[in-house]
Image (cartoon, rainbow, N blue to C red):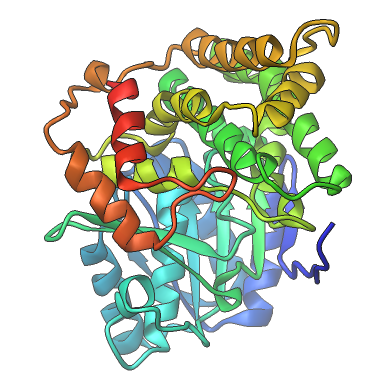
Length: 388
């Protein structure tokens, strides 16, 4: 196990009615806030009204930036930065899912930076200051409510890139499982695939000895397998929604990274796909991850895949390791399919004519794609072809 320092300052308010904590938190932190929202569902289902009630109770002023799209666009970020600078905003509150939170983080970082906020994504400029960010979460998927990262799409160049900074980690987040009840079956399923993909990226590692992280990872995967189908079939099942929401947060709040180095190849590949075709990130991962597994499986990696098969899927140890590994990969694919997610890029109207471009951009953006197995451009193209 590698050395590590672990510190997560985000305060979590989890459970029914925890929105009541919002007024006191805002009152102690801000005088004027920017509320960032998405396509309107938070207003349709009364969540925004709950937020405004607490904002008014705190006796602070607010401005709203609405209409942030899935795979959030740089244009919305620029708009938010301009609003914050002109209005003297001192905290950014995201009310929504991962796209809204990522936009809020980037806006908050851009306000404190004299240059173009895109420098953080493309030019390796470090983000050293940010307005405080807080979140009210409405979708279990990205785990952005407790991590340091944001992913933004630049439409004119069809780039989807990430940046990370400790200054962007939310100061507090409110997670009420009832606020996820309105998420439809398809996007609930896509969120579960996203959660599991985050765990996979950290679980499949060449660094041995991080047993604590691995056992936690396996536990989170088993929670997704147990409660994921329930959330799709019974969207108002509180226990299922609560477990999935908390698994979502723990999957990418640095806990699983401790003592090891993750892979993140599937995310690097999927980002190139959704940057061009604007598909749901979780859907893209559901398609790509099992094929990454198949491509990566070898005599060098089989032990980890077999461990996954035994500890997560309950496959008997008395089988050959390669058979256990292959069965585990098949079960992963079948599980995603059982949630109603596609298994091929062609099912979401993606052809193979831009695979070489995607592979090249993935290498250019990340330098190295994969650590469990380092991938070349040719390798990435092959995984995309397998996914077609």
